[in-house]
Image (cartoon, rainbow, N blue to C red; front, side):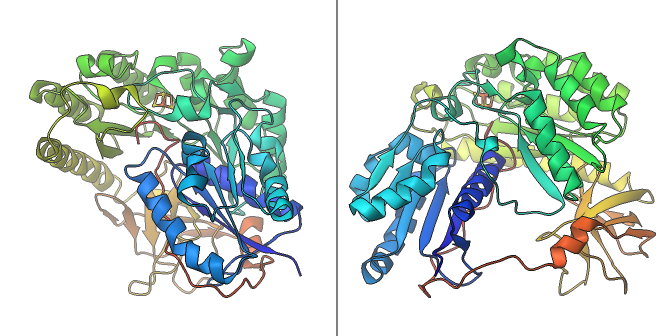
Length: 484
Ligand code: SF4
């Protein structure tokens, strides 16, 4: 009987996509996904090193599995992702019941390492320092029939002082445009309606093969992929944001009117200490340029509060930029030192209470701005791609949910229509809340899609070992790790 597996994902969208690759690799090697609420013969942890206490959480989860493993010695545990890249054989030293540790550059080795660990009856630790196989050339087990991630690059050439990503993911490596487009076309041919181009710094794309205009060209090329209705990308770095990317966004109808661009701080002094090479005036000028070309674009951001040495004046500069930029929403983070990053050893680390108080002020300001912007949408008609998970019927209100073209979350009343995740509807917004839009009127238009049909089809799973559960994974960070 085929061995079953489960992959537990922590961290950013990059990790979510890597987990799809891990699942695809395991299925190609004959493993079957463990059915929900059952337990797997192979448990893979795809870890994150960005979140605070990530290591404590991992070792906590591994401890829960120790007695399970004693009872079922045939079960295997593998640890991959950024924390594995960072801690390496330390993981097997602290949790000797782990069978496999693999890094961010050798995801492809997972099935072989599992097999070798079983055969040799000893833990296998394999960490490469640079990429050999671009992860997107590996098979994937896509989680969604209507939306897909497509990696365009991995790694990052920047050295932001708060960020562990360059140390763990290495220098930027760009995938060839032809390979990316082939994957996008294959997804669209399968009925996928929305693609998100993924990289640590997407608009640096092309630096690796000497073409600075490559990202704009890629957006335009996505515009001619048949059946592809929505193109998104994350995350761009303000330093590399060029006018040709804005022009490509405006001229390519299936590129969504949405931009997620990390600000991190509105203070030029703090940006300097973060080693972010743009300044607040440059950031705001990009936003002006985007709004001139795409007036309805929803612009979102990441902001870190309480970076070492941040003064009240610095923080006020952040509030000023937030007021001027009028972000649709912001992912706000309280700074905390991450081991292995240059900022962790900077002087003038701020007391937690100061950071918390500033954070609350920032959240209150942003919430008001988001709410004002959402109220402006009352009465407008939006197209919603109905989501799975988010799209589950709320038992109290009977609403479904999905995302508008600009990325806003919309809850709507489906009436009596049978609307599936992956279908597309048009609804009139009745109420704009701070974090979502509500449409309780009739659905104005409902388009059944192949992605919706696919959602109704069951996917193969196996019954696992019947082992006890060990808790849900942490919530996912919104971006590719920048700023988290
Ligand atoms: S924050 Fe983003 S741009 Fe900066 S080093 Fe990290 S991954 Fe690169």
